[in-house]
Length: 105
Image (cartoon, rainbow, N blue to C red; front, side, top):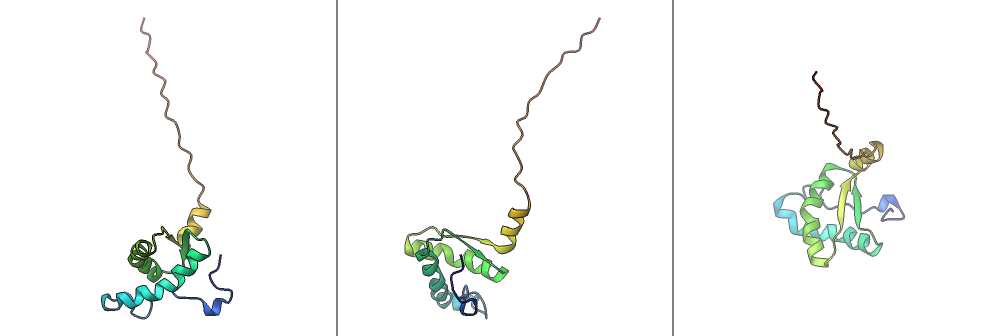
């Protein structure tokens, strides 16, 4: 689901333009809370983020926002999602051994 009907008005994760700097952490979290609340209100339990800066931002802000809002929103990267869709799941093989005792005459 897209969080915005108009992609040109998409809400950034809050991790761009130097917002990953420690001094900007509180402002960055407030900015991230805009999309976080929208995601929760839409019923999301996992969000897909497009870039490495977004992933860094999620590592930093999601634990705090989840605690603040008593929710458990998770994330994955866009390329991670594509990879998971392309690579089939491996079946667990059950290991079975047949022991044979050589007969010596």
